[in-house]
Image (cartoon, rainbow, N blue to C red; front, side, top):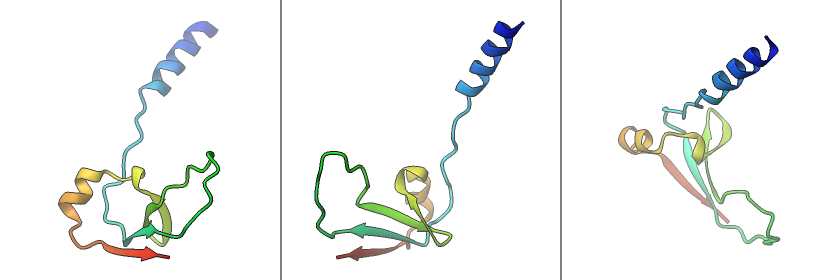
Amino acid sequence: MKILFFIIAAFTLSSCAVAKIQDCPEEKIINKMPKVIDGNSETPNEYYIYKGQRREIKEFDAAWIEKNCPNIKVQEVY
């Protein structure tokens, strides 16, 4: 019985897809500040501000954003 439960649980969890955000962010930040590269840094140089918080670009549906959000403010920071 436990084996059946684990098989069903594994199947259910593996079939769950994370939906990408389909809403226009307030702005896109492009970080152009110099940084030390140590080989372990995975912080992206570009991200969105969405509902007042930093959100990574990969969290958004890029095709939807391109089609529906033509006026996203872009800010380069130095």
